[in-house]
Length: 213
Image (cartoon, rainbow, N blue to C red; front, side, top):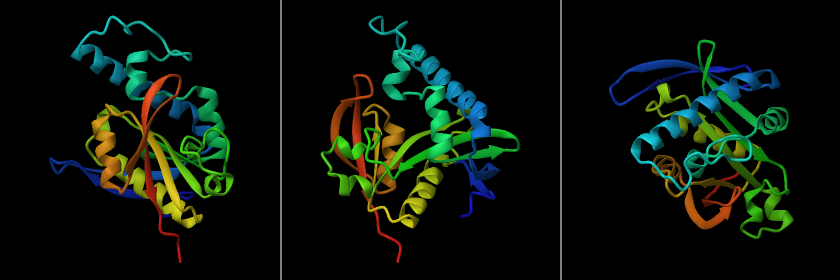
């Protein structure tokens, strides 16, 4: 799949409704659209969690870049400057319905710094260099149920194999059942529960990759 030029895909939900979306690599010019979509997703998560049950211990508390702590426990957003860095340096792509960005995903590879989750697992530099990290993925609330999480995982796996990575790592909140199920359906297995991301609990998931022949 050549996402530099963009490629159209058809997705369906369980009701049989179809959507034709454009998948393409992102550029720094997409920063505003990525940030707006992330804000929409975080707002929806926070709204749903407040509707379920109030939590006086954390309601009203803010993360260091403005996200409320209840939604951060499930999905932590990236500051605008980190999104900008990724758009310039990492593998980022998005799904579009016309001009509207409805899903975004990124993968980090080629680094041995603290962003590489292999550090949490005690990998040496040689192992770190062979890892890719499946970072943030988020989908417009109005476009959930069309399997975009699965599509994004498959595309990142394809790219990871193409560049010769031996494994993919990612992190997920233990309370995020949908994301956990999507990852396990795509071959990821839980490895270690850790406290990272500013004191939040995350489960490190790993998938061994078959290198391209």
